Image (cartoon, rainbow, N blue to C red; front, top):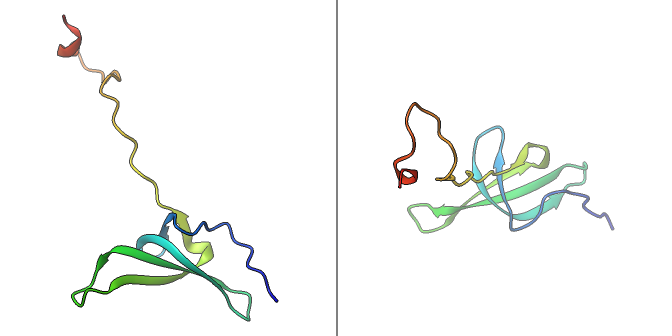
Length: 87
């Protein structure tokens, strides 16, 4: 029996480098020719209420990056002091 050797983590979000489609990795398949494919499921649904799914080659999957939270205390530059720190 063949074993899939993949760095994809089911349940994590990935983005397809080719199409830009982003979704959660919900399945991994290994084909007879050695191709590893990943199913990405989006949070959106189509007009019939079905989840949007897209199969991609494993090598095209990159982790979807979350935007870093803005640190309000960080120095944002500029000629003036931050009004919050003028007390």
